[in-house]
Length: 183
Image (cartoon, rainbow, N blue to C red):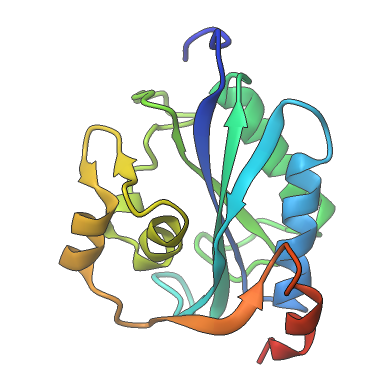
């Protein structure tokens, strides 16, 4: 991992929840991630529902992508993600099992790293429509470093098992109206 960047770069974080009040879990995750200085939210996608990928039989997920500006080192951002998960009550017992909140660091600017603690970009992001679709929604020209344009990657993997929930958002003026929309 490199030292702290000299200027803000775009950070892409993917959030998911399939236990409890999924929508509230995502909202609390966004709040926890941006509560302290150093990670400034620039955009939040709408909410997508997705079938689980891998792991045991479990409920469907709600997913969203948060774009942020940050000068924090990638490992500090990962620490903030893990803290947000813990604050939501996440317990890691089964790999790819159900969770109250999952926050993945997808990309930190153009940083490419094979560090076993935090691989950048996220090694499975290019094959996950539940990451690519919300990311493309908030940044149609997004590019996964070292891989390619997000729109092209999404066209390749398709949208099977992933659907946008109409009118449901995590932030902004319409968030309060969407509270009852979590199925």
